[in-house]
Figure (cartoon, rainbow over the protein chains, first blue to last red):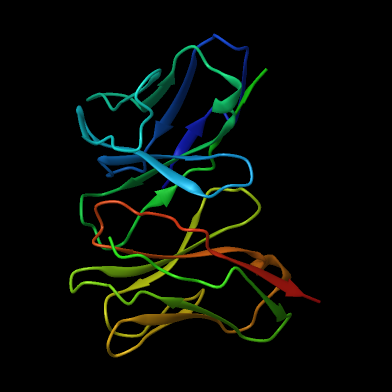
Length: 115
Length: 108
């Protein structure tokens, strides 16, 4: 039973380019969460999605960032016109459902470097 | 979700028990206590969780006080590979909010 799969593991983008980060949840999990960890900082919640729905995007920056979790395929975190401050590790987690007492399973993350 | 307070750092000798405290005095009745750890910027790893009873699994034990205002994570025989940042999180499960955690360093 594969865990949460994130790809790519490392991503380098030039300023102004777009970054697309993918997350495939664990089998049977329909809830996905994205977190960002800036260098030397803690994990910050970004967005919570169910299939085809954004449930909570209170942690998403207002501009340039978007997330989706289509009916088929992985969840995508998209960052348009990247800037150096977007350089961070982005972690995805999944769970079977909201309020599920067993918490989340995290992926290994995508390290985004903006040059 | 209730806020948690943890020491910034702790040290433990290899082979000894590591006891990591967490205060969560504003916890509400439907909130669980979760513990995760993050080893050197890897993805956070689930350790254990509990509601009000003490819990034990192959990794650790979780002791929750009767009033649920604090808890202790116990790693019974710490190894060098247990060096990590340990996060205590209180949540009803809708989302997990990570604080600063405790940097546990296991020394040889």
